[in-house]
Length: 182
Image (cartoon, rainbow, N blue to C red):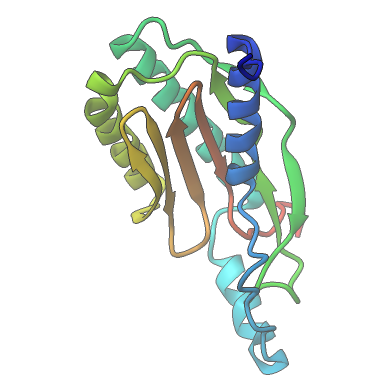
């Protein structure tokens, strides 16, 4: 007798959860060194020169929505909905001693994956979207047929994460920014 198989909806749910966990992006294996206290002033000055936390959140959210719409125009079976809630957190080095915060945006998820024959065209749109956020540093977590997971990061920590397996996900984060009231 063979082992029971997962139902398609359950498999999709598991895939979405796995992608969501990956999109959260934690640095458990290689935590950064704490910032030298003498550098805190320089880090705070850097943050003051960047757009506010709220403005960056709006920019990343708009980019995620735009990418989702562009993908749906190419692959009409891929429709998107927001899942989870935004989460706020403290900043990592070198900003951990500043008043900065970061937001990991809720995930934009499609229960249908990107078909492999459309991946390259859709990936190119993700590259353009990431570029519009200044997120030009690419990390490829997976790049196999029908199993893709990539992240684009800016020098200031803004991220755009995009993947497709049994479902598709677009996620992002602001990087460390000062809230507008600071």
